Each structure stands twice: as structure tokens, then as C-alpha cells.
Length: 197
Image (cartoon, rainbow, N blue to C red):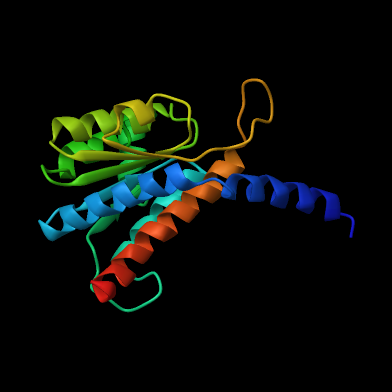
């Protein structure tokens, strides 16, 4: 068991964070309620992130358009990270900081929702996409940490707490784990709530 200490430290960090998520759950609930309302009025959701957050953005979109646990109607969710042609074209012609905002400008409409994932809260391309979403009359939901600009410019912010690993840095991987937790909880509301109401 060479990795026993390492795995225990990881698990203990996560366990400590899971002890007090009341505010986090309230934020997730607020985001879920808004998504339900938007979908009921014909809105769509556009999701984006970078790196691990890009993977979580695609996962969120496929859970909504496919299913989480049970068969139910699909919801219109589009991951802006999935179209490599658009991303490479925009990055080449306009710059990497515009890979999502340009797509939002083209596709987003009033009543739609932009969900931006950023553990730092300062990813320039996510901030620009949020700004473009506002111009298009969209709601901005941030899935982020407790630091950075994104949470302050969003209409709804889901702020994942994380332990500090240095004076200036937070554990990104713990935030990503909580972001996935938020995504799954929100997706679950689209399967449980219709049956419970």
C-alpha cells in the first residue's frame, strides 16, 4: 500500500470540504431553479470551460441532452468546448480569449443561459463569454471557486470551497470534484423534481 498516505490525505481534504456545504447547496439550488425556468420558456444552455473544466462542461451538456440516471425528455444544452473547428478557427483568427464569446455572439439569444466553469474565476475566455452573454440578454451562471472575477459578474455563482495549498493557491482538484458534485446534483433535479411534484 505505497499510496495509502497519499490517498488518505486526498480523502481527508474532500471529507473536510463536504462537512459544510450548506451555502454551496443553496447556490446549486438557485442555479437549478433558474435552469428549470429557462427551459420551460424555450431557453437553451451554453456551457464552457478550459482543461478539466472543459471536460466537465461537456459532461454537463451531455447529461442534460442525454440522461443522468433515468429516461426523460432531453434539454437543449450545448457545450462550446466540443466544436474543434469553431475553436481553432476563432483562436487562429481572433485569439484564444474569444473562442467562447464569438460562439455566444453567434448563437446566444435572450432567455438563454451561459454556464461558465473556471476554478480560478479569472479565465479570460470565460469572462469574455460572460460579457457577450450579457449583451445578448442571457443569464450567466458561474461554477467557480471563492476567488476571482467570474463570481462577481455572474447572475448566479456556485462557489466551490477548497483548501489552500500555499499562501496564494487553492487546490484546483478539490474545486473540480465539487464542480462535478454540483453538476450531478443539478442534473438530478431534472429527473427527481418532475416525479416529486
